[in-house]
Every structure is written in structure tokens, then in C-alpha cells.
Image (cartoon, rainbow, N blue to C red; front, top):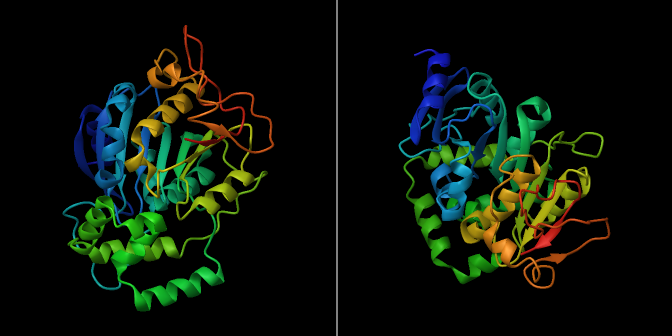
Length: 341
């Protein structure tokens, strides 16, 4: 089947899984939603040690998220070889850069996207956006690290390779030390899933690819051209990296959401708060202007003193808790917002 025909099927089918042949290999995608070609598609990219289902199902199946799903086409992309039932790559296989796969896929599928990435997926979408700014209308980056690993990180990883299993290395990437020490049910579930994964070789290739990432060299004069929402859990492994990334971005188009008690995977542990923040972000872009923010609207008078605390010294006249009522647009992404939920 030709690429254009596959793209047409993706736009017509809802909630369907597709294996798309690209010039860089097979890409597994799952599509849900309205099929509205006049709006950007929401495209997700998962972290290492996960696939699109384990990374995003909790968030996108959340009840309040359905209002977004029915207004947009949602495309969950699996990194090559990471989906359930993926063929095992042979020894010595060289994994193609995922942003190259995205370029090929999007060139015949969707006009523009709103990218939602976690960890490695956030890095991949960041890299893609810097080289293809016209294709991305907005970015939600969870646990992003746009820097290459330093020498200390490289040495620590070498030692970890000798003393820790692959599943333990990936778990320490995904979750906070507090979560690891508590050995929660979430930790146990993911540890068992990774350890027993039939495509463990593929997961290791993706992990090594992310560990060898290059610095994206983001700075004020070399940054994203679209609105960005950075999200990180309080005490998450990549909290410092997310804070550093925030300092390099344009404060007039960047929102920074630091989520308390969210651990390393806020989309799994705090889907309600993340959904509301995502709705505000989309409204700030000019979409879903009439969407009702029920819980945040009710807490409007108390959120500044309880649910949300403002940090930093830059001017922030608008907050995530200022609801959209009476048909008015919510806050546009005109100030950097550092928020603890």
C-alpha cells in the first residue's frame, strides 16, 4: 500500500492501530479522535522502557480528557520496535533516529501537530520541532532533558551497566528515588513489564540511543517558535534538567508546571491536574475556547494560596487557575508560569 493511501486510512479510521512503512522503517501508530483536519493532531511520543499504551493510556482515558479527544485527532506513536508484538531486532542493528522517522511520517499524514512527549519522547519531539518549526503548533514536554550527557553522567552510566540490570537502570530514569525506595505497585508493575518484555533487545537499543543523545543547544536565540508547556514532577529525576530548560526558553511563550507529589511520571500519578493544565494550554493557543474548566473554576478563589503556588521573580500576571468563563479565552501563553500543584 502506498504511503498516501495509508495516510488517508489513518485520517478516516478512529481508534485503530496501523503499521506505517516509512523510508526509515516501520512505525506503529494508534489513532483516536475527531479526525478534524482543520486542527492540529495531538501527537504523543513515549519514554524509554514504555510504549504508547503504558505511557499515555492513564492520561488519555481519563474522563476529563475526553473533551479534548473528541475535538482533536490523537495519534500515539511508538518508537520503532517498542510496541507490543514488535519483531526483535538482530544483533548489531542500528536504530534510526526517531525524529527522522517522524519527519517521514508527518510529511504525508498531518499538516501540523501539538506534540506531547515524556522523557526520551520529549527530547525527540524537541529535536523534531527545532528542525521543523512549521510543523508544530505547540509542545508539552514532560521530564525533558535537552542536554547531552556530561562526563560524570557517562562514567556513572558505565558503572551502572556493570552493577545494575537494564530494568533497574530504566526504572531509575523513569521514577524518583522516593518512589523507588517505597517500591510502590506502580514501580513493581513497570519493573515486571520491562524484565519480561519479549522485545528487551529493542528496548535496550532505544535506551542506548537516548543515552547517546546530542545537546540541542537551546538558548534564547535558538529556541522553539511555538508555545511550550514544561511539566516535571517534584523531586523527579529530571527536575533540574527541566528547570534549566525553562531558563533557556522564551518566557513569553513558555509555561512551567512543577507538580508536587507527582513523582517521575505525572501523567500516570496526576492525570486530573495534568489534563486541566493541558486544556488551558490548548485554550491559550486559541482552541476549545468554550471548554468548561469545572474543578479549577470552583477553586479559583483558593488556588493561589493552596493548590497552586507561584515562584520566581519574572512578571507573571496570569496563572493556570484563572478560568475561562462567559466565553472568554483563558490565559494565553504570555508569561512563564512556575506552578506547584
